[in-house]
Image (cartoon, rainbow, N blue to C red; front, side, top):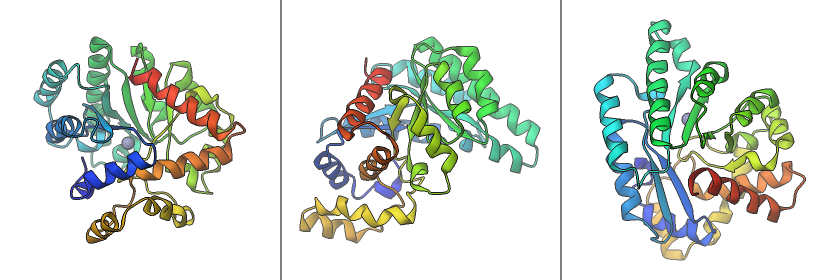
Length: 279
Ligand SMILES: [Zn+2]
């Protein structure tokens, strides 16, 4: 739904299809983009791959929002129960709290929105997509309180084995993204190496969370599958910092970290995502 992809979306989805990426999950971030995310899923269903929407309010976008927006979310979720696959992206962001003029008020507001949306997920029996940044300790008590049936995804996971284990014990799976492309992310890489394969799913968070520049040299592989006209089309617009096609790169990196075969990792990741969202 990001404007960075606006012009080239059909070409991008074609490119994904060629790389055997068949499903893209697109969470909402604020009431402003609820309809956009829902329409995207309708427009591109099976054309040539499918987009699955989630509705939620991200902790970065709470400014100017109040309970009316939470009511609107509830209404939208109820109306689109058969279209959306999760509540997300929701969570607490420690960095935003820290840099706020009034950290206590910011924390309280983030907690109010998070709590409300977890409760909504519980009511609707939907999984959640959870945002974290300097907030494992802050998120955890809320997730424990609600014990969601299908739990969900801790997206863009970075952290220790202990932190990961806490989420796994609640039934969550962890989104493996570009963090593993940074050699300085040793703690996270070691965590991903040790966790059960049953707990991992792949993500890009595009256009956010770009891969490290050491890795991006290999990005040409995505271009290799484009026809000349598609390539020309793509060159007309500046490339976003990250793209769904980089999922393949993240998968390849994961195969270098894990001991299992690429085949086994691919099958298990697919099974994991199936389990959370599509059963
Ligand atoms: Zn996030």
